[in-house]
Structures are given as structure tokens and as C-alpha cells.
Length: 185
Image 1 (tube, helix red, strand yellow):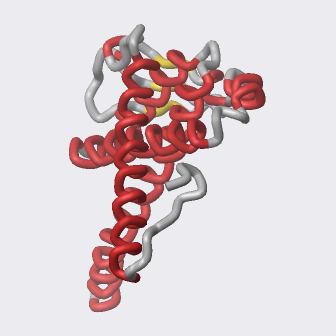
Image 2 (image 1 turned 180 degrees about the vertical axis):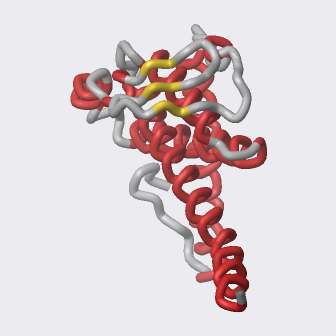
């Protein structure tokens, strides 16, 4: 009996570590989906809207709690904007390659059912915590490209302003004028 009690205590002490590992795996998964969504948003492949619908369904159906789902959506969006901005900074140079491979992803072999259940390409069924209307989780926004460009431009403008402020401050501290080759001042 003593060994059983010790085994139960050990198992209970490991539960938080297992939960943390599961939470980390979920967050990493949605960050990866967000990264791919950002590339899709930047390069405009033909199946972008289908990807968004499936990615959000995975995000909702795989979450173990409302809090995890909220954190997952935040991380998904953060990764999406970061990968979009990275592609923008590279002047969308990889878009031809991204468009050609985007529509061939395994996620498109998934089947999304009306209650939010998902059948993965390997046959696994993912059931959400609570059934939901799967078609209502994503609506195509005809102005999404203008909105994301505006958000990205504002974020990049803020970085440029901070960069120039820092350069100006460095010049004041050192007592010399900061010269920018780019702007010639």
C-alpha cells in the first residue's frame, strides 16, 4: 500500500510537467500555423482562406481550455504578423516559391466537419471541447491585404523612428553629428 501511495504521489507531481509540455506543444503548433499564415497573407496563394479556416479550427479544437485557446490565438496572430513583416522586409522575394508550395500542404488533406471536429490526413479525429459552427470561425475579409499592410507599415514606421531617435541620441552623447549615408544628412 505504501508503494502505491508513493506511486500516486509521484504521478501527481508529474502531471503539471506533462500539462506544461502539452501546453508548450500546443503553443508551438499554433505559432507554426501562424507563421505559415503570415507567409500566405504576404504572398496571396489561392488557398489562403481555406488555410485560415483549417488553422483556426485546429487552434480551437486542439486547445484544452478557453485560456489556452486565447493564448493560442494571440500567439497565432503574433507569429502571423511577424512572418508577414519578415516577408515584406525581404520585398516578398520568396513569394513565387511560397505560392507554389503553399497550396500543396498536408493541412489541406484534413476534413473539417460542421461541429468543429477535424479528421487529419493520417486519419486521427480531433474533437473540440465543445461543438461549434466550424464555418463561422473565419470569414473572408476583402480588405485583409490593405489592413495588414497598414498594420505592418505602422509597425515598421515605429521601428524607423526609434532607429533614427537612437542614432540622434548617439550623436548627442558622443558630441558628434550622426551621419546617415542613406539620407545624406
